[in-house]
Amino acid sequence: MADRYSTQNLNRTLTQFAVENMGLGGPFVADRLASVVHVPTTTGKYYKFSKIEALRNDYDALRAPLTESNEIRRSYSSATYACKQYGLRELIADEEMDNADRAVVDPERDAIALIFSKLRLPIELRIVSMLMSTSVITNNAAATAAWNAVSGVDIEGDIDGAKLSVRKKAGVEPNTIVIPPHIAVEVKKDDKIRDLVKHTDSTLLVNGELPPRLFGLEVVIPLSLCDEAAPGVGSPDFDFVWDDNSVLVCFVERTAPSKRSISLAYQFRRPISGTLDMAAYRYRDEGKHATVVEGLIEQTEEVVCSDCGFLITGAYA
Image 1 (cartoon, one colour):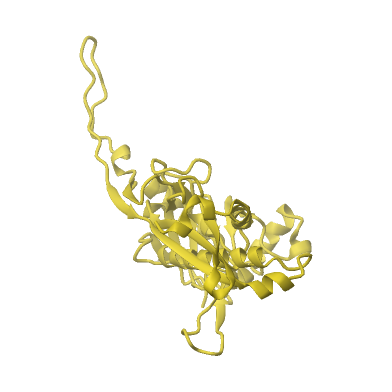
Image 2 (cartoon, helix red, strand yellow):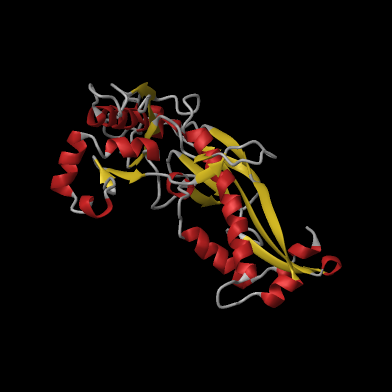
């Protein structure tokens, strides 16, 4: 690894700031849907979960006195992950450092905050492309009617059907619902939903949004934005990252995520310098009379049990 990544260039203060900044969450929801699992090597194997074998009644468990119990066999399905390292850097001119009003502006912290925001955005995009794809989440069905339709809408029925599918196929109780923001606007105006919220959640008049839980599911409304304009195009084209017209109902392991725990998806992250989820480096570029601030993260994202998710398609028209 290059000299600039040695321990002497690792800036603990900036790294701690980056970790704290990541922990705030903000508009990004990738960590709430694909928990982080730390892995010791860049490549390795992980379990692909299925409840089929555990639910089969194909062994006779009855045991007669003085006889041995019948023997069973376990078979595992696995896949290989491969972490990739992502990094960005910003050069801070000596003139900017000398003239910065430190009571208002901290060029180095501002740089690392921007760097990790730009590193988190593609993670979010990759999570969206996996979890909102019917080719990946093969458990899916169209909503009874689009949730913004004038009539025939059955939001509770659609969610109940999704929950039942996850229970039957994965053997776990779904705990999360992801409602893209443009759909959430319509859901909160649904007469039945509003009537239920009125009697169960007193914050409706305060924030005007959906409650934190809906039909026993944690509500996730992702608000991250991205510029969808092609590179080099002058005019920005901002839109929500989660602009899909589907709603995701799923089970996410947040209490004890590991390669041995069933969940919809994980982020397999290899710690930088052995222990750090992310690392911030600070070093000099004397030729440009600048301080370089650089951020690194090494990970990959994988769906480990697609049966833990169900897509309600056509929820918006």
